Image 1 (cartoon, rainbow, N blue to C red):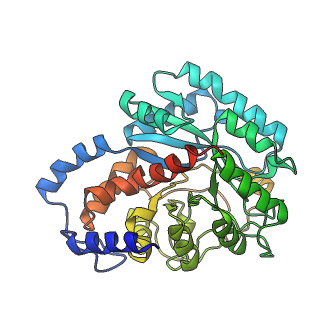
Image 2: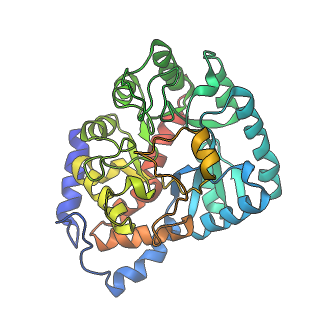
Length: 366
């Protein structure tokens, strides 16, 4: 964390009207005046969900349309749609192609987001900008030049690995922890050059630290929680949180129950505990949302993706009832207010912090 960020956070936390004195408990309720302020605050927010596996054409037109409505009800202006994770180059291209008819059919509610200007236009027009996001880099094979193609097609964020060992480095549930490969180093440098955000969620501990150190640009964990509160292989440790913040990056908190708590009941409150923890450790300006709402594809999908049972409980999966879908995102704003976060902090967590990183990286095509 840089000194300016720390001074900003300390100044904010000291001035917070309700204070932040204990993890795991909501402080006093929202006053009538504060409750009245929230709708205006939400109307001004650019809400970003940095992990949206349900924004995928493979679910069909009706499901895509219904999920758009849920996101609009929750105020979402930018959704990072998961195009692919372990899929091949050919499968990935097919998925990318399948988005375009949906963008056309539902153009009254959605647009293809490739730039921050697109995101701001979506906000102004009451639409959702969908940005292409890869949750894995396997579709590159050993072809570094494919990154330029994907950038041209609108891929703005690429996650290095998806749980397993990839050509760029190890995933977070892989038995080994070998760090970035030589090819992985080339990939990070080329992503920097092209203006593609490096995403370290699902990626192995050593690989993430080496990628953050190597990157010239801020790096994100689009959808990861604090290991200190929930020791899961999918969550990140304090030095990872500090490293990404030190590079100016952001961690998006994840609503998947197995990554919120071990042994307890997952809820909006436990999600906010992770926000609190990271805000105190590195500053609230390094925290965002990557809620990762998903539905189980059953055991066939579970086996195909080779999920580690210790990390991913077998399906069916369900989310906390008070933060189960994107239309419930306003509850996060209310919860943050009740814990003493001011307008600037809430706007940042809802999406402003992610926008800051995306704008910086996407505007730099070297």
